[in-house]
Image 1 (spheres, one colour):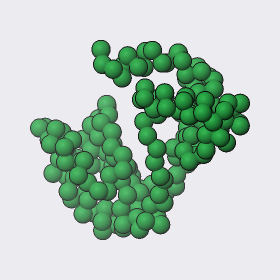
Image 2: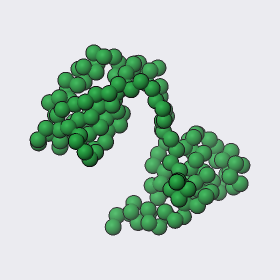
Image 3: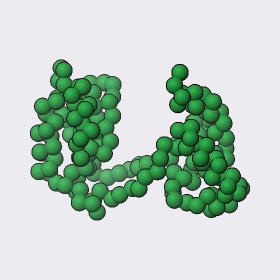
Image 4: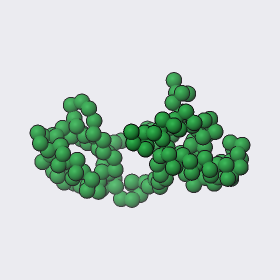
Length: 162
């Protein structure tokens, strides 16, 4: 049994309501101070810091990130691309996809396709060139994103989800 799995088993039941409240605040704003979170959840800043550190150590909190506007960064298109790999091309693709700068998320999935990717591109000609790189690995289906309906929704306590 690996360490992460042991951590999962030992801590899963210890994510109490206070920890879920702290996680909710951090998911909305990872830069919120421990003092401010503490005021909202009824803990001292050191107590919040200790809980956050423990959740980081156990892998519950995997990291912090900055959200960037793709449009303001020069990417006019966001697309979802599904790929059904040709025989013998899935493993090479799984290595190659890590080098594509356009790919912001990539998932290996079940079903008719093997891969689903979210990509950001400068324009239509960039999309065309990118698809030309992909088609050596398999059959592609491309969907242009018109708007973002839900983004980075916070993870909630599973026992409270209906």
